[in-house]
Length: 157
Image: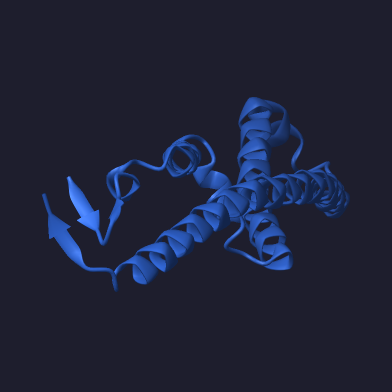
C-alpha cells in the first residue's frame, strides 16, 4: 500500500465506476447501428441531403429505364406490329412526362426521409457527444487531482 505523506491513498488505484459506465455506453453506441448516424453527422445538412438526392436521382433513372425496357419487352409484339401507325413524338412526350412525375415524387419523398434521418442522427449523436464530454471532464478532474498529489512524498510501508 502506498502512503503519500501521512495520508493513505487507496483511491488512486480504484476504478472510477462512473467513467467505466460512461465508456461502456459510448462503446456500445459506436458498435451498434449508430455507426450510420455518426457517418451522417460528418456532413453538413445541405451536403448530406444533396448527396442522397443525387444518388436517388441516379438510381431512380436507372430503375425507370429498366421499367421502360421491361414494358417494351412485354409489349414487343404490339410495338412491332403498330410502329408505323404510332405517333412516336407523343409516346416520347408521355414517357418524358411520366419520368418527370416519378422523379419529382421520389425526390420529394427522399428529401423528407433524408431530412428526418439527419435530424434524428444529430439528436442521437448529441447524446453521444454529451457522454464523451462527461468522460473528458472525468479525465481532466483525475489529472488535476493526480497533479496536485504528485508533489507529496511517496513512501512505502
